[in-house]
Length: 103
Image (cartoon, rainbow, N blue to C red):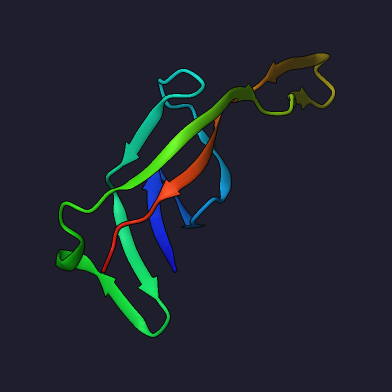
């Protein structure tokens, strides 16, 4: 059994006890969050999507708040002695899926 959920503008295929990394969700480690944008639920040959999933939620536990790897942004314009260097680290949340909606 698996579900497709949407959070942070991205879609994830999740199953029971999966650990996924998503964009930051405001919750402390150990808290339970509900993800209400469920796009699809499948159990073997049975498939539910669209209006059949209205009100269905996926429950997850926050494992930890983390940060992604550092990304270097370097821009250079040739022959102008012009260059710029920046860095960025994305804030992430690690979730463990605890419950999927029933069909």
